[in-house]
Length: 328
Length: 297
View 1 (cartoon, helix red, strand yellow):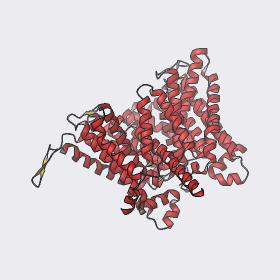
View 2: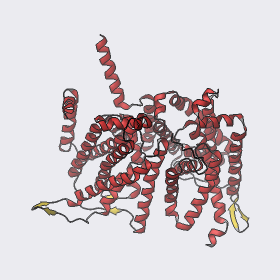
View 3: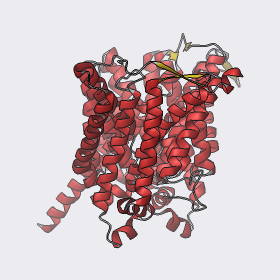
View 4: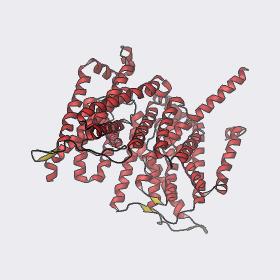
């Protein structure tokens, strides 16, 4: 922990403080539309930071992370109005059970799904893992669609959800939690082990790193927050539709944001999220086709020109400047 | 039960399977040699379909002639992508280190550009044309002439491609490259040229398949994705780099899909396809016809 406080001195600390303050006071200053945009930004931060815990650090490239969000969203919708409105624990009345009880269930379910799916899937490497995770996500999606069709439900309407402000701060907490998770994992001994797996799994195993346990732990850690985010996402829309909640584009957007920002450091995804979200907000509504084509071009340019992402570029530039200063 | 035995379904399964095999053989060439996740593969079929559609609608050109144009355009796109994008990816060790991630993103970028570019040019309305749609009777099963031609042409082409790579020097070089990139470079194979050839031929086959499909199915800018998915299932089922395996697996998937839907209903199509994909990846990642050697990377 002391090293973290040391890190927070100077520029890093100022930036962190400004960011946290901006997130805290944003709803007080912004219009409804901008608060909605804020929720989206925070949602993508939570997704992308979670994703890099597994895929950025281990190189096991999950192309199906939306499955956790979808499961969380599905549970939130299925359990809507099932819980009592408030419960009493040791004389204290706690309200909002509808929301937080389902959030807890979603988190637990995402973790269990990651555990069950992760054990067999993480034995498969490289491109096979990419295709496998995509396949699992699509399979779960179509199973849910068939279940819903069997129950003759075409979408579920959820009335009486929490207001925008509550959702904003809940999403903000998740974004912060995901950021801190990525931050601490990437700086821990565990994180070093995950990077060793990325560089050379066989060598890592020979060195005594418990690769299976590490990979599985990373998978579960990276699944929990997306599960809860998915639950909140459904609440935000007030409507559950499997094709939308399990949309593979969500997995893809996480990947794009992480790669554009830089996926080896918790700070990287923030850049990717802001960059792509702002681009999308400006162009999506008016010129959807041009926006998509532009995203395609930007993606190719980033992979070829800045494979370490925006953050990787920043680090490079500052190092070069530091080296220049020393030389002088 | 009568439907299952009538032969009608079998013909439908064979047509679907042969088109799948055609698309998958092309994907297998690209994936096998370059180890890149070509998620834009089905979109070349879309391009081919649009070429056939426009040539027919504007100039009344028979799809069988515009098939060559579709192939040429797809191969040209492949050459352009190769020279401007993939040559650089293959040359950089940093990009190759995470080849699956990077290739996925680059090909996704290409797919998005192709899909939305087509949509911007020709709108997203489904289109179609009639060509050779008289119904033929084979035994107690009926089939439209264009489907029959598709079946025969795709089978001939897939077998020709398989034979080409089995019996020619280029084919030998390509198979060597699939087995071991470094070793084939050491023995003097010009791997860059093989990359380019396999890339162009792979795309051309996909474009060709699209041209064939356009004769009997409606086309639209986002029609490619199901073909991409089917092709990935097939090359994993048939084995990476195993072209004959792709043919067999294509037919298996065609039969599985057609009969599966007939037995369980259309809602289960995707569950079936993804279920097969996951099972094969978990149980036999080397493919149904592969040896004992597990392809880890």
